[in-house]
Amino acid sequence: MNNRENAPLSARDDRRLFVLSTLATGVFVLLALRLFFLQVVRGPEFSRRAERNSTQLLPFLAPRGLIYAQTDGKDDALLDNAPRFSLFYARGGDTVFTPEAVLAELVRRLPDQRTALQRKMAEAQRTGKMTRLLANIPRESALAIMERRAFLPGVNVLAEPQRRTRYGSLAAHLLGYVSEVDDNDLKRDRDRWRSGQFIGRGGVEKVYDDLLRGTDGGLQFVTDAAGRHIQVLGRLSSVPGADLHLTLDRRLQQVAEAGLDASPSGRGAAVVLDPRTGAVLTLASRPGFDPSESLARHVIDPRQPFFNRALQGVYPPGSVFKIITALTGLNDARWDTHRTFYCNGVYLLPITGGVREFKCWNKHHRQDFWGAVAWSCNIYFYNIGLTAGPEALASRAKAFGFGEKTGIDLPSESSGLMPDREWKKRARREGWFDGDTLNTAIGQGFVLSTPLQAAVFVAAVANGGTVWKPYLVREARATTGQTLWRGKSEIRRTVELNNATWGTLHRAMGNVVSQGSGRVIYRPDLDLGAKTGTAQNPHGEDHAWFAAYAGPKGQPAEIAVLVFVENGGHGSAAAGPIAKRIIDTAFPPGRV
Image 1 (cartoon, helix red, strand yellow):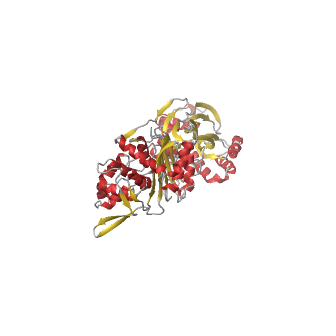
Image 2: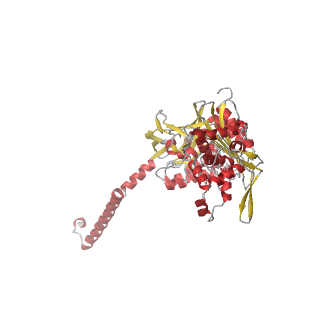
Image 3: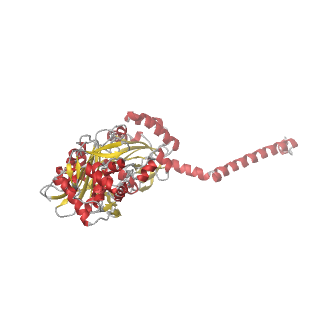
């Protein structure tokens, strides 16, 4: 009988058992440490990764608020939203329909988007997140892809809101435009923005972006290994942005833009304000652009359609500035309306070693204050300027807002320039000469104004000295009807002059219409005042200006109008007819 099985272990066997036991214990310890590392140390990370891989968020973009103008006292939408189809993808674990197979199918449906699809599909696979592959795909392609959903695991087609203009390029500069957030936006504020969202880039779209944008929603769901939706975890509806109700009059805006389009150069600006409140009724700049179309082609357009000539462009105001000079003279005890000067077409200014000629546009012969304003005689205003002095001219002009921004609720406004002795010493490092005073007195030389500044000035003249801060937005209203924000009239300052001075100026500007250079707007049923302007331009044709105010007989003026035609020539010929059409639209003949 073999008793080896019951024999005691030899020393050699003991050593083998010890080694095996030690190895087993070591393996056990290593496994335990690994398990501890995976479960305790990296457990939260793996948990988050697992959740991220199994749950996805399909974002619902909030519709931007609508923007309304006024037409016959009723709201008229200028901007609303239309649906666009966007393509989303989140990678699943399907082994039959691989990402490569999905990409091939999508490229077959959208061959022009091969490169974009490849790039975004790679991003989706790298991040494991729901990714917007394409936005604004054709409707037919969207429907075809939806029909093939069974063969496109992880693919979603979603209808999203996209900005739409109701009247093409109408009021484009004041409305602005939107575009999708880019890498710079994401880097600047990643917590605020997400790829695919829209941001206001100009006009009220930019200034009131926080109100217009609303709050996005989304659908959170669980996907299986094939990328199929197996459970909805939550759905959050988007909240539309607030609607903006503007002070803008749509008909006046259309008339102004049509007039500028038909002007000699097709370039210019027109502003209409309510002189009783500062509300902006029209703010036109041409040429324009359609915010809902591709904007890239406009960037290289030499006509600069993105440039808002109404508040960014600065130009010599020309004879419109003579109203400032006239007020300066009327407020000077050394001056009266009966004082006369002879105009033979040139003013001879004595200078060291001779004389310098300053010309008038015509030979007006002997002129008093009334004739000088009516016919815009340079010689008369040269004499007022020299008598009053440059400080008086600059002080009066600055009181009406020349040389400073108006404060309108739009971006990128220019401040213009109202020169004086200190400015020239600082900017040009030279002294002020009498010739500078002569140029300033007729709105030439260093004086620069935006059309909007000139309109604010004309409104202040019309109402007797109240300088308003112009505003565009009447109120912001939630979709529930609740008013979230309300615009209000704001007085920047009041120019104090006695009633007799205002009466004299209004009578003189009335004469411009009844017997002078502004007769193009004459109507016997309205109280009208105007001043034409032709500003010399060293870079080409002269600029044309026409400033006016109008209201029913015996009542305060209801509109102040400023029309500027770039390189338009004479103000009465180029800008005057546009002002007439604006006034006739505001006060239809026979209905006042």
